[in-house]
Image (cartoon, one colour):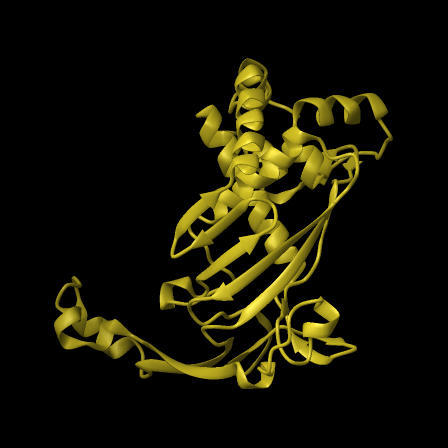
Length: 285
């Protein structure tokens, strides 16, 4: 099953791939359409995993240990001799649809996920044909720009410095009062296309886990960095029943049904989840 997501930037987007001196430059990749700016699949997969974990823990109303946090939010790690434990894998997939979907390292085994995530490619005159989208005359070269920023030392401002206990000491500490740097970005109005492939073995409850992750993410829809500077915000449409426009999350009836199934599953397994995921020292997946 292929899911297609179309993003439209409603603010500039910064996704840094390389830095040089005081410049930060958009991530690029070489393709048959030429060298293109992209947003990496790994960054979006990480966002979805984080939001799937947030949704699950919010539904349960619990906090977790560092080890469990790493499994849910970061994919875990390997800390022992690797083994192929089919029984453990089957139990995890049965009781933890989020982990089954995203996969991860569970101490002594690696569990593969059930989805493949593609990079986000700009929808432009160079790419529309390979993306299977309608013709557009816009080139990515007309969408990429650079913006200069200044980071000031507020301790050198005599009015603001009056709020410190020893402003005279701060004034004499450093000579430099500001730093200038440049960031490359994709312009507001840029459109990106992404595909996610779900394996044939994905269950309806796992689909609900994925839709819940999108819905949680879309509550604060941003890509890339510098959200504190007004960057990264977007609208998005998917053919998976979930979208966001102007900050409003929209779910069609099929998406609501998948989430309802997932919510019911979490509620049915709640006591087991609390025992296995809770912050106590015996918590373990």
